[in-house]
Length: 488
Image (tube, rainbow, N blue to C red; front, top):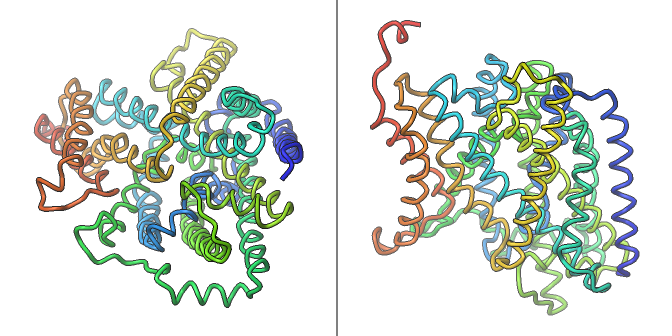
């Protein structure tokens, strides 16, 4: 594809986002930014969350992953489904009962100041790393297919992308994102469906016949029964379930959208609807990946990294229309994760780390100015992280993302589990130490697991181990509640 055409499509799509932003950000205030004034329609939130949860990582990495892991990722997705049910029935009722703006204020009410700050800090770390990885994935594609042709440096590309996100999220925040995510989810799903059709036509076979060929081939293998494997089906299922509980239910970005619904009942309807659709959409991505592999085999196409398979075929082999479809889909998958991350991080830093809502002496304008400064500062951190990941780009992005999640979301999982399922009081000042030591112990266990556990390799279940170590650490430094507290 012509680099100029790609750039024009990118600019046209961005202009459409700014039209939506202009409509939704009018008369927005701080409560609009944080929780959308709690008036977001649940069905709009549910639909938009598909794009936010899948992101550019799923759009590119999952199809390319089929070559190495077949359809085993679907077992993780089944785990996602049950994780969403836990969120809808356990966590959402808690958040709505306490009327939280930031979900980490629960930790302050349950444990104390230091636990609260620790939980918020781990979210900030987790989301900065995860969002930076997702942004890198998309920006790198734009660099390869557009900016390299014009000899534009990578850092300029990154700066342009981040500046666009700043501009359309700065004022409206979550109220804007609920609607822009809906637009972007539509384009992303449309791109996947059209890509499947284009590959089918290029191979000269009907879609259903190709799907049958995939289903009857080794590519469709879902359940790995070797318990030594890091993709053993039981590990995959449990990991998917707890990854969802941690990365959605304990994540300010995803919960902030749920908390913008009118009430708990609508938020739960949103989550139930979203969970079912997510299973179908992920299966569609795996079908797309299998079709891409069939096409690559028929044309003797090879790529250095699995993440490059989809863009290489879309841009170089399926014609300009298919390339346009891919580009729009990729952009549509990328923006929801980036804008949501920036908004949620601004919320968490402003409320949890800076205590902006508690500073009653500050005027609304002063609080808004501080929020703007936080917003831009976090964007600057994204900029630096994306440049770093450019240097470290050596594995499938989705694998990196879940590895990071195992280390940074584990302490959050342990803290919330302890708070919800025990009534013991913790030594608040010890919590930060436990939360830092737990990932370090997990890293050592993962590094030497084959020696220590007779060839066993840790996969995504490292998140569970991390949460368990945090839970036990809190238990060791806890005490039974006072009699009067226990009776409440």
